[in-house]
Image (cartoon, rainbow, N blue to C red; front, side, top):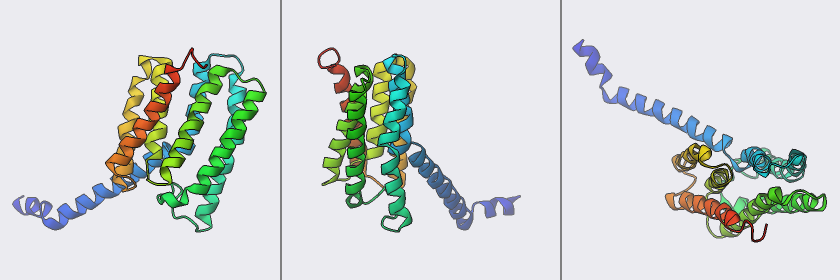
Length: 216
């Protein structure tokens, strides 16, 4: 009994357990980063916009926006990864983000313009344009500093959810620290960069609702 207890507490066994925990935590952090990445969040963001608009047929505009704005930037980044031009889909080096950002913004502008021309309801267009403005701000900041796009996207979605749907969406607030932890654990951002991203996402969609009834 005492020998077994002693072996269980040896430095080698403790180091092995620590390594196993670290591997599991890394897998969890990567899964969170993938599942709650800006590209993946496009779908729930658009679904939320349809739900909040409460206008019949809005889902068709959401599908059209998704088809125009999302696939091309995603495929471009996948091509960068597979061709060896970047090391990771999440583009940890901010210098690699210039062209993906430019293509994403161009696609979003084209999709928003198309929806406007087709008569999409303003209540759906407003959050779409807010997300576009937020993307432009993230791009400009990224030119000089590596702000967390992950936390900005999730915080924006959470803020919009709470303001549009009410207290029933408050549980989603937990997603923000969860994503921040994942990005910090993987060493992709500092605390300041994750907090700045979350602040920008929150500010963007809070401003949207402050302007409700004034410009939309």
